[in-house]
Every structure is written in structure tokens, then in C-alpha cells.
Length: 324
Ligand code: CP
Image 1 (tube, rainbow, N blue to C red):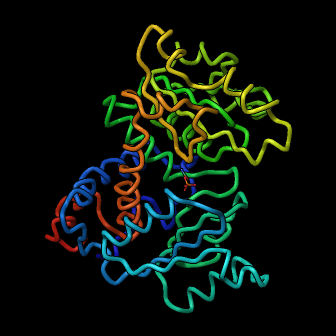
Image 2: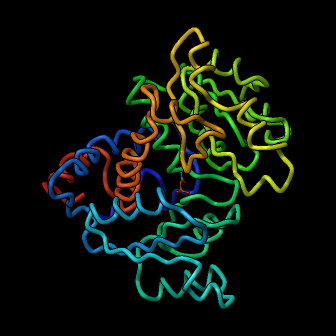
Image 3: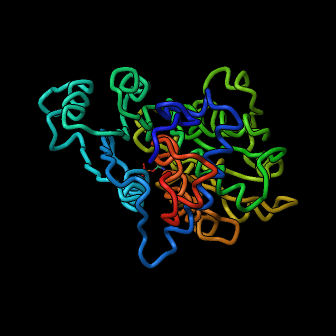
């Protein structure tokens, strides 16, 4: 990989400050990388010699495994660290952990952390590239990018679409990253959920607020259904799971009552029968597993670009034809 400047800068912390050109560059670069995962031998030498640490201080299935597949398919050397079993349990700080990793000569850190701002905090203190894999309620940029790619695959363009995010917006880093990315690419964005789960002043982000999920479904081309964070139930944000499903659950009955079809996304993990019914999650308008597949290509694109790969050479790089 040649040491050219990345079009994304050193790190990927969020979508809030990315331009539409930078977002399109990531999505366009992901396109050629999709094919690698369809091969019998899913490996190209694009990141050969790079060492990447996946530092996950919160649970994750999709994001951690997707990053690990993306790294391995690009031939990077990877190490996984979780809070449990590491010296974090002995009280080591995030920066000390990262500096010790740097002392072993790493190139990139993918971090998931419970604290909003943890990824930016780390990025300011270590020379390695830092990729935010979800920090507190702040941002989850790679999730939003794979959502954007999946919507673009199915509906052609993001500009002009109406996308409504349904559920726990208050605690959701996925919602924030989606709102930033969708608005930057020219979509109209709606949000819908109980008053207790909508941040005060959310309209100031430039989104339309729906009180009734039926109105949101009627308005939207795309519904991005968020997990009801069950750990929040003790906070009294909703009366009961059954009540939430009755008022806000995405069911085929509600979708069939609308005058047009709606594409269904969900970032996972799903609570079937709470925010989404199984026949919708597994139904013809759902692209939930397509999101997961696209996640690997999007993460490959981000790793490639941050390592200095040039967008216009991604096609040749994945054939092993050029050095990044
Ligand atoms: N969508 C998402 O972030 O899922 P995980 O928590 O399993 O990574």
C-alpha cells in the first residue's frame, strides 16, 4: 500500500463531519470489495503487513465479526481484545491500554466503547488510525454506512428518499449516524417513537417527528427499525414490551394498511415481537441480512481508504493487480 493521504483523514470517528463526497467515496469503494466475499478463496493481499487491533469494551456480534472478516479478507494481521480477560479489569486506562498496544507496533485500532467520545479521545492520543465501532450514544458510523449502501443498492439513490428511524432514538448511536449520513446525502429523515425515547429538541437536527407509527409508515420509503434497548426498561421509558409492540411495533398488518411498499432495515440485534414482528423481519421487504453482508464490504473499504488506498484503484487492488 503506497503512503498517500487518505480521503477520510487519519480516523473514522463519525459521519457528522464527513462531506457527501467522502461518504460517496466510501460507498463507491465498497462496491468492488463486495465480490471478494463471494469467492471460494476470500482473501486478497491489500493490507498485507498491517496489524489491526479490535478493542471491544462492549458486547458485539455483527460489528466485531464483520470487522474481523474484513481485516482477514484483506490479509491484515488482527488481534481481538475484550474488556473481560484484559488488564482493563485491573483498572488500566484506555490510553494506557492503547499506548501499550502501540509499543507493539500496530497500525489501526477498531474501538467499541460504552463511553460517548472514547473513539475521538483515543484518536487524539495515538498515531494509529482509529475507527469508531460504536461509542456510547454518540455515533456508529460503519453501521450507518452499511445502511446507506443497502438502501442505495435497493432503491438506486439516497437523495430525495424519505427514511424514518423508528424506536429508541434517545440512546441510539445508530440513529445519530444515520441522521447525519442521510441528511448529508440529501434524504429527508423522520423519527418515530415514544416521547420518552426521543431526545429533546430532535427537530433541530433537521428531522421530522412522527407521533404515530402509522403516519411514519405512510410517509416513508424506508423504515430503519431500532432495537428497543431492553436494558433501558428499568428506567421506565416504556410501560411494558407488550405495550411498546402494540403502539410502535412494525407488523405486516401495519405495513399492509399503507398505500405503498416500504423497505425494512434493522441494525440488529432484533427483539422479535417487540419492535418488529418475525414475518416482517423475514419478509420480502426486509433487507436485514443484506445489511450484514454489506457490512463486510463497507468495513473493507474503510480499512483500505484509511490505509492510504486510492478509491480509483480499489478494483485493481482487489484483483491483486496494483499496490493499493
Ligand atoms: N448492529 C450492531 O452494532 O450490532 P452488534 O452490537 O452485534 O455489533
